[in-house]
Image 1 (cartoon, rainbow, N blue to C red):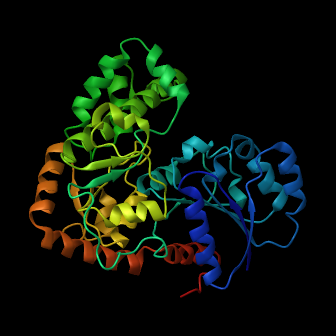
Image 2 (cartoon, helix red, strand yellow; image 1 turned 90 degrees about the vertical axis):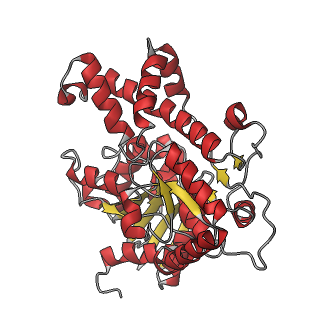
Image 3 (cartoon, rainbow, N blue to C red; image 1 turned 180 degrees about the horizontal axis):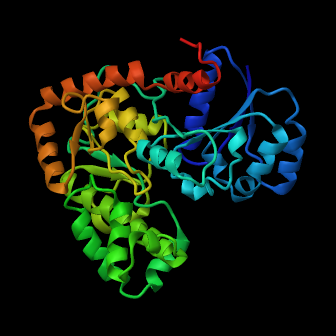
Length: 385
C-alpha cells in the first residue's frame, strides 16, 4: 500500500501528522510526504503528481488553508483514489461536507458526538463518519526519571484562552444586548458542563425569538449569533474554570490569561519538549475543553497521562469507554466539583499517583498513534490483526 500524506501547519497539527506518518510506516506501509499546497499555482503543480500510483491520501483537518479547502473536492476527483481525512477540530470550520467528495472520502473524527451527528446528517452522502479519538506519542511524552522536583505543586493548565476569530469577535461587539445574553447563558451552562453548549444556545435563541427549533436553525443570522455566543462563552469558561480550580496553580498560553491570572501566568509553552517538562513537574494537569468539542477528549489528557501525571478533566461520556474514570482519570461537571476534586488530588498524592499510573498503562496500551493507524488501515485492509 502506498499513501500520499500532506503535512499541515499549526501548533499541534504537525506533531499529530508526524506521529501518524511514523505509525503508518511502522505497519509496513509506504508513505510519501509533501506539504499541503497553499496557492492555486501550488495546487496545479500538485495535481500533476497525483498519477504516481498512490492507493490513498491522508490529511489532518484538511490542512487549515482556505484555498486548499475550496479546491479539495476537485483534487479528489482528479486523483481518483480514496482520501483519509482525520478531523481533530470541528469539521464545520472546514466547510464539511461541501468540501469533500463522498465517493472518495473516508472521514474520521476525534469527537464521538460530532461523528454521530455527521453520520446522520442527510447532506452527507458518503460513508458513515468514523470516531477516531486522539492519541499519544510515547516518543515525546513519558515519565521523567528520576522524578524532578515539582515546579507547579498547585497544578497546571496549558492552552489558549481562545482560537482567534476576529469575525466572531466583531459580531459579538455589534449584536445588541449580546453581553446580557452571554451572561444569562453562562449562568445556566456553568451549572453543568456536561450539557452541550451549542444545543443550549440554540434552544435559548429559539425561545427568545419565539420560533421553533427547526425554523431558527435555518436562519443564517441565527447561526452567526449562536457561533458568536458559543465563542465568547468558551473564552469565559476557560478563564473562570482555570482561575477557580487552579487556586495556586499555573497557566501557560496566550496573553489573554493576564486578565484573570496575571500572577500565575507563565507565558507561552511550545508543544513537545517544553510541554513534556512542564507536565513532568506538575502535581496534576487540568483539562478544559474548547467549545468545538462536544464529547471529544483533548490532546492533553493523553499526553499528561503518558507522563504518569494525574489529570483532572471535564467529564465526558467518552471517558467511559476510553478510560476507567473511577480509577484512572479524575473529572468534574461543575467548577465546584472541580475544586473538590483538585483538593482530593493534592491531599492524597499517593492515590493520585496510583490513578496516574493506571492511566499511563491504559494510554500506552490502547491510545497510541500506532493504535489509531491500525484502526484506519483496517478500513482498507479488514484482515489486519
